[in-house]
Length: 70
Image (cartoon, rainbow, N blue to C red; front, side):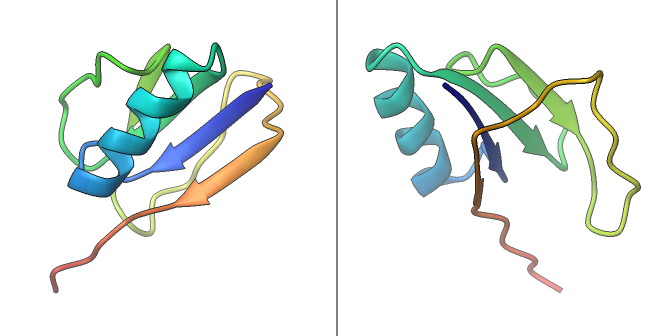
């Protein structure tokens, strides 16, 4: 199973990524900061409003955890 978590470097999303990773689920993430999350196979750097296309990866679940402070 492949899961994409948006805002993966936030507190809740990071802990969720860690939990899913421990359950042998393939975790990918997005972050507005250029910081890789060690619980993810790959972390994509995006900001809200950016065009999002991924290298032909099909996700079973997308979990939205982005928090926009503005």
